[in-house]
Image (cartoon, rainbow, N blue to C red; front, side, top):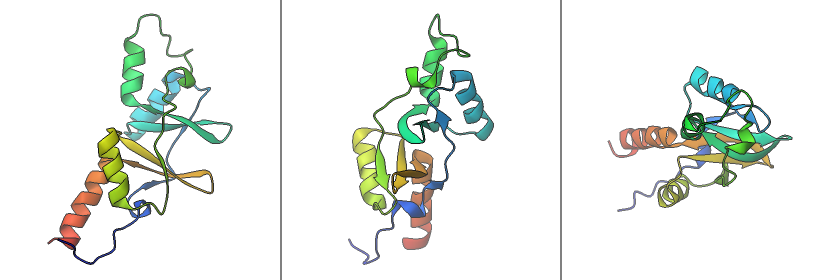
Length: 137
C-alpha cells in the first residue's frame, strides 16, 4: 500500500560529522574514542580519505588475540577496507535494504568525496520509530 509520500533521503537520518580515526593510530586510541562517545563504528581515514571502517567487534577480537599489543598495533592492521558508501541524496529505503541484504551495521555518507555522515543500525531504528510515529500513526 503506497501512501504517496516521498521517501526521505539518508541525509535526514544520518549522524552528521562523524568521529573518525586515522589508519596510523593504535587500537587503544580508537577504543578510547569509541568508549568515550558510546559509539560502535569508526570510519578509518588515510590522508583525509576513507580507507576503511572499524567496529567495536573488530577491537574486541584483536584484543582477544595472543600477542597483540593494543598500544602498538595500528588500526589499518585490523580495519575492514570493504566499506558501504552512499551519497547524501540516497533514498532511505534503498540504503536500509542494502544494509539488511549485506548484513552491514553502518554506512558512510559522502558528498564531493568528503565524509559528511554515518548511518548505523541505531540510526535506522530511530528512523523507523519516527516514520511509525509520523506517517503511520
